[in-house]
Image (tube, rainbow, N blue to C red; front, side, top):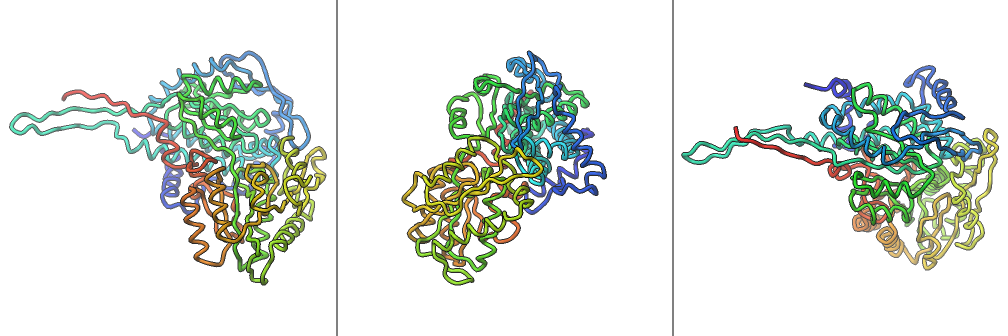
Length: 555
């Protein structure tokens, strides 16, 4: 018998399965905040729903509650003053483990249908989520809406689709018949049960609290596991809204809502205790190398899916669209003030310059022209505020100040502070560009998160490609770019990225940027270099989150 929610959302699931098989463009969730798609009152309703959370207690009715905790301060300069339930993590773990029995009984098809319903509900809350993401992360409105809501939902759906595909390969039962010559055949009935491995812990990040959370959340949930979301302390609200909606859908379908809980804590030790608890069997993490490596080293009872720091880079060899190339780079470096795990940090240029459609450009000219393009792109305050957003953390602001000081390289373009007339308390910074020699590895060969980029002078194109490959293999990268008009250079860079196991973007000059990743088509990370040990998403991201337990008997 088909689960009603599986039937209800079958067209969406089929679309997702087709998309991950063909890798073309597809999305069931509109990225445009259009009233024609979301409803005439959706924008106002979503803003009102967000506003209604401010200054209030966010009730979730979770077990083990001992008090309330909060303290989010928006990068736009105001306190949210939302209080969240402070719950004993042992109580959340035990409740999650207990809830898995009923979740397993629903079966893979039922779990898939219920997860699809959750995503559909979250999509209807996209404006509310968009405002929550914007005000906790400092993203501009359009980016917060898109990345925080429909694009995050895309990534969640992608995980559900992969999980369903892997689980659907396992038959519920079979008849096993082995011939015995003249003797009667041996006949057995065999049943195969898909069982979740245990509680999944999803540790959220402060810059993308839904986009980086939904893949692990829905991968673990749809494969039969309970999930505890531990959000970043300054980006709790998007996770809380998500958990409340998921718990409501679970309750409506007769499932214990404690299958999914929110663990808000003001102690780092709580996260460490959760990550090493025997009941926790998977950990999803996005963040610093230090804590990510700690998780990999200490969460021995769990499978850790970690996205860590990297040094994304671009090699410029030549171009037949110089102005378009510079414009594409300017947007890439400016978007959300470079506070993306995919933003390019090292732009590697040959010492003798590059050939372009505007003639030869020296290394110094490339530096100066890129700086001018960034300045021009951000010259209109309304454009600058919309694209840059606000600086999410004081640590990023400190890194910008360090780069501005010239201690890391020659300042080609200094970062300046801008005022946002709508949010006077926002810390808005433009990108800083630094010129340095390839030998100055201590400057550019570590992730300096934020709007900080280095134009690195390499001996020649071959040296630039070799440097890019070494950066990837030593420090990791999620994205690598190349600009070249020569096929042999493109081929050499392609082979370098195969060896380094990193995604490559070639000659981007229009409306696609190296730091953008499209669900169902682009693999976000490969799991093959130090920046991440997993990919959003592939079969490996879901298949190790469940086990098949069989039983058999003679007929």
